[in-house]
Amino acid sequence: MRLQALRGGEEPRVAVGLIEGADSVAVRTEGTFEAADGRQLPPGAYRFEPCPGGIRCQGPSAFESQAIALTPVEPDTASFGIEATIGIDFHWEQKEIQRFRGGLKLALDGDDGLLVINEVAAETYLRSVVCSEMRASAPVELLKAHAVISRSWLLAQVEKRSRGAGATEVIAREDKHIRWTDQRAHTRFDVCADDHCQRYQGIGRIGSPEVDRAVVQTRGLVLSHEGTVCDTRYSKCCGGVTEDARTAWSDAAVAYLTPVADAMEAALPDPPLHDEAALRAFLAHPPKAFCNCSDPQILGHALNDYDLATRDFFRWQVRLDAREAGGLVSAKLGTDLGRIIRLQAVERGLSGRMKRLRIDGEKGSLVIGKELEIRRALSSSHLLSSAFVVDCEGPAERPDAFVLRGAGWGHGVGLCQIGAAVMAYSGFEHQEILGHYYPGTSLMLAYG
Image 1 (spheres, rainbow, N blue to C red):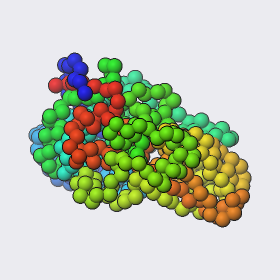
Image 2 (image 1 turned 135 degrees about the vertical axis):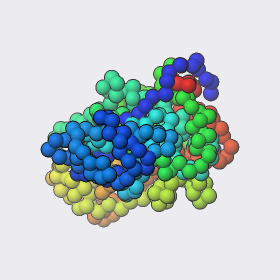
Image 3 (image 1 turned 90 degrees about the vertical axis):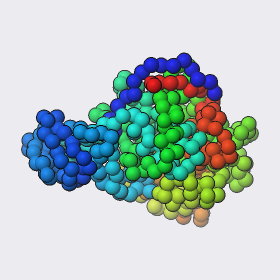
Image 4 (image 1 turned 180 degrees about the horizontal axis):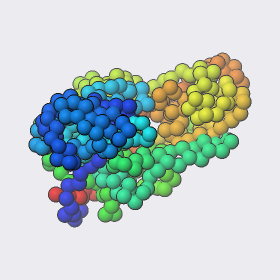
């Protein structure tokens, strides 16, 4: 992988949305913070809540303001802690106390909620992202690869937001429901802190010199394609083949987000996995793949605890009661199809992930997509992926239940995190990992 001509930009600052719509927010500061009016807030426990005049601050310093912006007096040592929810809407959702460097902003969010934003230097943000997505004890070449793609993704999203791109498309007709979100439609900050953007869980995750080394040694480096910073998507486990970006998001092709077999110099399956019979064979008899890993040492060093709780990520199975399926569709999509009698793939990508799914019920039919909406509609949280086949229990014309047999965890586009971890443990350098998952890209220095 070659390094393109350098750019001479400056390290950006990032506005990260930590909490939206909160009734109140408890914050504990370590170090002194300064408000926009010059007021000094000593270390301590504070509570912020909406009030008729804007926002009320209670604690060692008490005041009211229309909006609050706090800047650390000593930014290298000061921090603030809040309780945050991680894995929002996913099966690993949980609350934890997180600490952050940088500035703290609070603004009204709607009529009676609070928006909490952390303003932080990009490289500080990335130190947290890398070890929020992967464990800090992961191999340094994996950490370097992740630093590059997390930085690339960040800059690509900031650029999209600057031109107002990347909202949600919804096609809602009587017989069709197609929904995808290329980027969360954030208007008051650059990125959020959770899986819907990329995980940013504070400085408490930063626990090894390897993380610092990985970020420092790749400082400012991004992946580029034809001189443009790449929108480097990634997911937890591709299941053996990565997916095309068009299966998950816009129908516009992205040259470097195309399917690859998750093994060195391996061809894509033939026949391709958008064929039902080929996918069934692929699920039952998977080929060698980097992400086909059950080694507890590799996984334990590469994945954080909440990810380790998901064991069957390469191949998985879910049983869905027919009546339960109807209830889920009604609750998630707002369409009452009654008891579900058939689930049929309409269109798949080359990893086997569904782009369109037809749902037949006793009260009607609906075609839904794209992949995330399919995962969302058939689970109380989300299915691990949309790369699944469907078998029936009971009478074929009116099944009692559906058995979903699937592969992978996530949308499958771009870098496969577990596959990349295995590559790093196998001795591959970060440039080789990046070249494998993002073909045709180059390294470029976005800022020094």
